[in-house]
Amino acid sequence: MFNLIIFGPPGSGKGTQSIKIAEKYDLVHISTGDIFRKEIRGKTDIGLKVQSIIEKGELVPDDLLIEILESAMNKHINAKGFVFDGFPRTIRQADDLDQLMKKMNNDVTLVLALEVNDDEIISRLLKRAEIEGRKDDTREVIENRINIYNNQTKPLIDFYKKQDKFQAVYGVGSIDDIFNNLCKVIDKYM
Ligand code: AMP
Image (cartoon, rainbow, N blue to C red; front, side):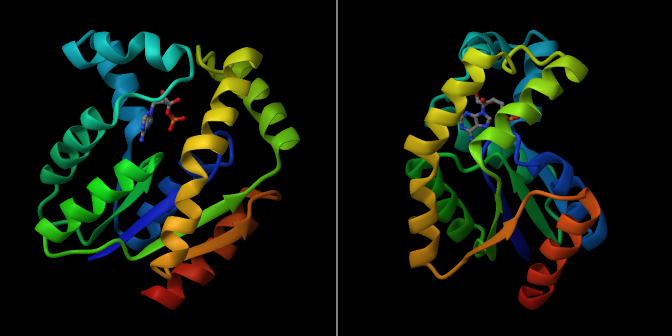
């Protein structure tokens, strides 16, 4: 199996690139953010539980994440691999993912990071707020999400560097140029 984590701050283009990668390499795309947004739209128990957390730009509790991820993966038992988008976001989630992979006799193959600076991220997210109307794309919430990324998610860079799985690609430019650069790295690991 080829299991890829697309890593980067909010607004770095993880969603856009994950979809393209999943399509090209025939992998299953799992976006935990998309899963939560669907649960919220459906007013499910999970949706009601996470709605206010997500609107504030905070992180959903780790316990819930691994549960949701395992059930999403179990829907695709014949998958050639997965593209994880927006997961893991904490060291605890990364540990849980390693355990889950082990249980499935598998491994995280590669962590690919999109490098985008804070100013660019803020301007992209404000633009997205106008287009998509996501409730967590207001300036205040955006700043909160960036802080949380810096404090809780960035430590994963070292976590995966220690496992020799971390690679970064410059995430500013045209979608296709960035995609091609990502593919060049992926092809080395295929
Ligand atoms: P995203 O679409 O990936 O930006 O996710 C939107 C929101 O969903 C995040 O700001 C969090 O509130 C929540 N969320 C998504 N993935 C995770 C995760 N791995 N851990 C905790 N919260 C998450």
